[in-house]
Length: 301
Image (tube, rainbow, N blue to C red):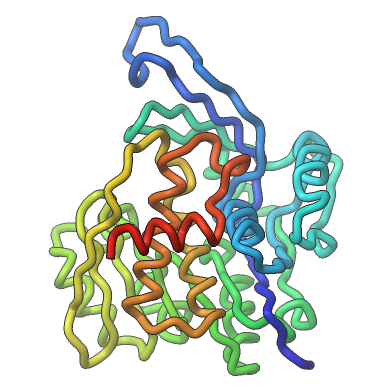
């Protein structure tokens, strides 16, 4: 099958209720005023699809089953956008949703994911080879275990580059990825007590791909096997909401991979995407455009 300038994404696609507070974050026994409330597509894959579409890239996505409360919103949102949702499974349960309270740099997500994953019931699709094989690049969330690995194995069989997130050093997803974007949450969970540079050295040794460790407002670390550990500072912007920052960074990496960017350029492009994302709310209604990303990069050269 001929590959084209499109992306396939596999992973979490949710309905996200986001609440932006007016006067700082929640405090026990105190009233908080809601400035804005939105119900929009979310999840690592849902957000990345929205951003990539805004950057001008056609997307096909699959993953989480879509229930009756999420489906109307999801269909309406992606109508007219270059995001193909035809592979999704629509169900009669309420659907997977999360709830996020936000105040500037601080946010608190809530959901029922522990219950969902411990139920023993599959609430996501199995990735289809025919959906993956013709893409130019792929993004894979690691949360669906063997099925996430299956998506990676299909990519490997077709010599198709993929990006993953938060995949530890000893996993198939990390070892075969073109790019693995690792968050501070992941390093805190899997590498407690280790410095970011020590984690980077461990991860570099296990893959030929690019590893990026993001650290919020602190400098990112990135590098490849046998190379130096490089640093890059995030763009300095006024933060309105950090919701979707990491998912937008992932989308920027996928765009860079699709366009054949060298490592420095790819990391800078992804960082600019993320910077624009945190400067506005809600992200799905105001995703970064290619023109905005290029202008931010040129302004800071």
